[in-house]
Length: 418
Image (cartoon, rainbow, N blue to C red; front, side, top):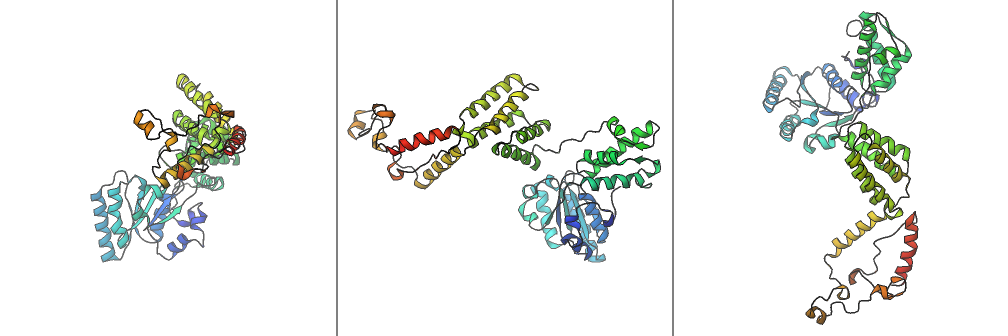
């Protein structure tokens, strides 16, 4: 059912609309080397084939996983001959180009630059990370989106009616509810939509029926996998959503994204590590108990394991999401780091040094130090503790949220005595 004509291509109107750059490039037969970036089953390979057919280029598929440098040399040699003797162009389609090693990517570079081949790379990974900068700069990047339910429904109905390439020969029908259910289960993936339809059709035929229904779909036991790659961009997208949901004090979204991570196979200890960081980075002294809750959840999980360990993880995520927020700890850390980098190793004031030998005492170590416990409130008036060059710098600035409001008031009083 793979479309062979541009008119059969469904979806991606933002890339292939009548006034789009790519549509105009195809019509004028001036297609550049490109990277097609998008999730599985949205038409990356199909689009490469359609472009080759529409522009009368010779289509050559080069597998990123199995292809060798020698094979690439053979492809380039043949492309050079076609160009010289037949005025034909060669479109080299590389599926999963993110799996190319650096040597393979570098081998493509001069031939793309010279125009001997037109490279069309397909990837589910962010090209900024997956393709080296030199090759990426010579390619146009087109981002393909997951197909809408309407687009998937169109493909399902087309497969049911096409007797030559689809299931039309079987004389099967499907009600709107079943087609809509297939589109939802596929989650933007055309290949998966057709696989679901095929499984349901086989079940229907085995039962001697002629209609694909939601009951048949349920019986064929189709369950769409979660789109998630623990080493790829989607992993970081979901982690980012989890952190931002807790930071935004949304417990519902926090638990949802955490469950997405765990269901997709992420290590619960990784999730706990992210929450441990969050407890200090985004809550800090606004609720000092947050760090205790997560460390307790970490200890509890290590004793329980899964599946019961999901309870302390959820407990911790909800507590973090509902806690007052402060990034004062993070800001204090960054201010202290900036002062160290700006001023270098400033000497420790003599009054703060310990006179552990007679010579040190003679040199003035510890002279003038005021013992804080000898004064009211445990604060020595006029005493300072930073190096002389940066006395008066405010590194920790508490917010007025949660427990930090009390700390802020006390700190203002303490700083006033100095």
